[in-house]
Image 1 (spheres, rainbow, N blue to C red):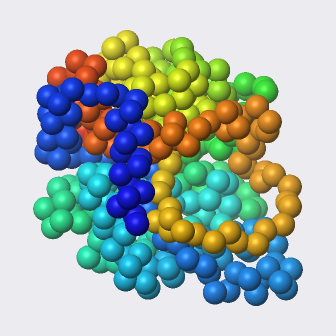
Image 2 (tube, rainbow, N blue to C red):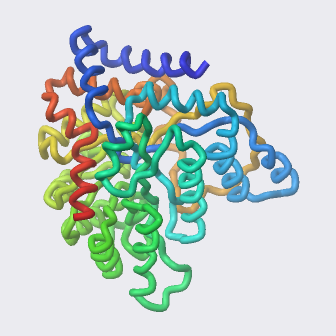
Image 3 (tube, rainbow, N blue to C red):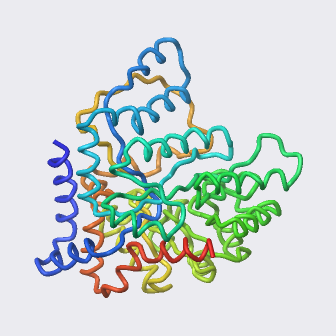
Length: 400
């Protein structure tokens, strides 16, 4: 069943690209030979019904408790089923991805919440040693591939900060703590304003705070990549200007094609380039706008590559795959929007997206991204940089 679902995803990309036999064969072969690194994404998650979920719902558990129960089960408990493990391996093989910069921290600065998601992914690697290895240094990555496994390189959707701030030094120490736990990239902000700077969804654009400058200096010192994917234009610009090491926008789009608040303007892209970083293009149709399909995604990639150089663009899909293709709906109750997520509705664009558009850009279609780049005339060397080489370079430079 999972194979049929994957083939439907692949057909959606084929229907968009219409590649020649020559381009298709060359792109697929190049993809197999290259080291493929998703600049920000999600490993496929398992399905099934969490045995504790219904009970928790009936006794009045809140939104966050229910979400955590569901997440822990989908990332860990459900993989007790050998069928789910087999589906996982099939999906990884289909995508041809070697490593993911895995979202493994909640969308906040709360240390306790961030540890909850990090524990899920740390445990996932321990639970499935024949599938995964967790990488914390770039030199480990080639060996993981040689052993026929997939690597998870961890990132968080926020900078961990203590709930009570008594001194700057005390606040900054958690960056080092999470580095030692394996985190190698952190969002400076997540849509809203925080102590570091303004998020991309704020109507104001106040930029980086003085404390934010100290945060970036500490990230540079420790070896953590500053990520401005969810930061406001001015915060992104100033972060790239003050950082002594590469800054990235790991999963975003470009303002030239998109008015979405996540899209980065040319001034920001130029600053990210000057820092030595890259702009990772995501696979969310409403953020891409235009045709909202794989061609639109490749338009964004090509724009950055042609205008700012192939050394400064990557692909961070920001989407995933649910391995439970026959999943049962879970009970749910109406709740207020999540504070940090801040997804405005209506008008976010999801109501306009078709399932075919989303399928065409799905992370399982990584081989077709490569085919699309071949169609657009990029050389093999340029494509290798875009689909993984630029991420490898930045993680090495950050830890130097």
